[in-house]
Image (tube, rainbow, N blue to C red; front, side, top):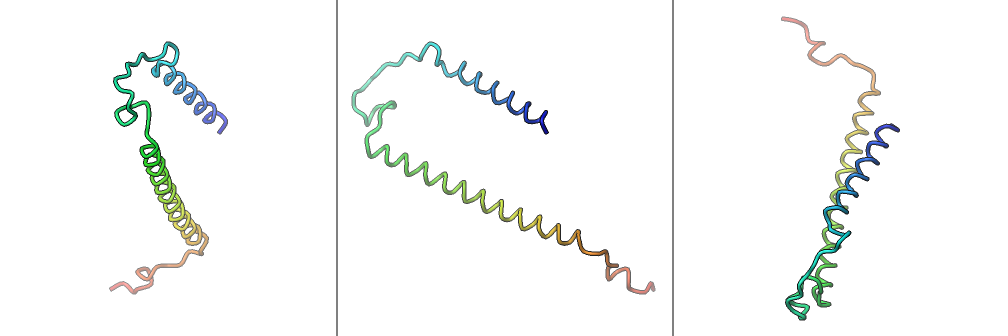
Length: 101
């Protein structure tokens, strides 16, 4: 358990270092501003665009969380039934009780 946790931490650190190196945070990315109008800019947003973005993000997060909770509930019920059946005493099946012809 401890070894797998250390491997996970190592991989996360490697991913973070790779992200910093590829994002260009060290030197900065030169940009050319083509328009001062926020409707045409990729760096600015109008209040309407910001509201639409926030609504969309909340909608997606709520649906992803809902789907995750639904799957977790289904797996929990399935696992619960498997535990109940595994604790039951063994009984011969109907096929074993039938007389041979």
